[in-house]
Length: 312
Image (cartoon, rainbow, N blue to C red; front, side, top):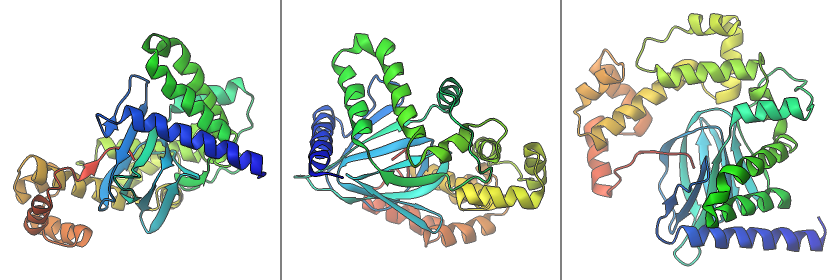
């Protein structure tokens, strides 16, 4: 990258940070009127929190954030963006932020239907490899992509333009993403009949039915795969097995029920699908490092009332 290109992308990033700072002065977690967009500001590092990352682009204009998926760690900052192509349960925390230099970031949900239509309209080649890669990745941010986000945020100054112009800019952002180094991952999920899309459907089923008994054989059959192939592709995309995925969803929802809705451990365990309170307690301690009662007490003492955060 030349000095001119470096200066241009630095200027674009600075402009993006100023836009986000301006719009988050009154709210550190702003959901604008632009569909799928969220602006975020943090003025201090945070402890790791549970989060379900939906398909999205996470771009930092200032600061840095760490995301942990299974045993893997992803860090994104001013020079790198994170993309999630399928709903994934993670632990996330802010690693660089201060009152003087807050973390300033944006999150844009990915419209997979729009991505599929763009692939058709643009005659983009189908992914050669039918094997789904990890559903989360980090890559460098281009000046063109930052410029697109600047124009998207600027629509907030003219709300009457949003219904007409935002779909055009969103298509441009998705197109640039499809053409980037991370494009093949997104194409894999957006391609009808691909293993990536089939596993994504299974993930969505688990998210909506985690309280039910998990029958992997049925999920595998509905995706048209053998059990061993289904397990392989599921782990390749999510970094965990279907059972681990379900367990994560159950334990974190139970934790939320106890902390936010003041349910006792037994009631929360039964509500999320556990039949044995003792098994729930064992798995809870293994996940969070302390039994339910002690963990919830510690969280209250820390003033942490939101243990399941939204995207990014």
